[in-house]
Length: 282
Image 1 (cartoon, rainbow, N blue to C red):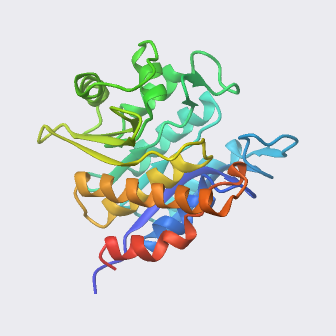
Image 2: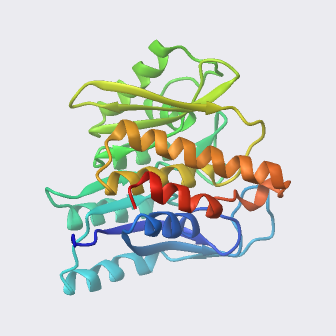
């Protein structure tokens, strides 16, 4: 039997509302990958559409966790980051990358900070520059289009997009330093929505689309990035990994819409895990 892979997931944890660690842990674990968690903050709920939530910042705990791990000589096949709440956390994660990076492991950055043309209100206007700097250390980055244009200093454009525009964004993102880029929120019409993937070493660009489901569903970016990460850790190539992540995310949205669940509470990804495991070869 092969050695079990291990990943360090660096995200906040919302006690209710499916996103961040409560999404990353089960999805990547379902891929047979051991997940070690570094919680950056603890919230009673996520912040999308919900008010009155509690928030405890854990910035001061992050590097002591790494110190202890290094004393145990722990090794990781990947480091995976999502929402980071401050410049200080960006700097700390950059330090983690320097400490735990090896020639063999992957650094996967989901630069969670914006959507629908707007930077999240909790961030200062110069935050994208800090996230851009962190992305230069990554092997794989998974931004949406809003996050992309903010990091590139370009204006936000409403879709539908053209292949030339999307492929231009992919190449500009790869120029930041990442070997592989997956761009979400891609659509060339109002019937299909999905993602574009670019491997800068091979030059291959691929697309994965599914039927567009109306509505805005919280936590889907984390579901997508976690499924993508799970597939990559199973040694699935970028094109197929992107297809699997799109299929898993859209299935999660479809189940949620069919059930009439409050969209603020997150999507039903759990019932899609058996299918995901089959797609991952388990």
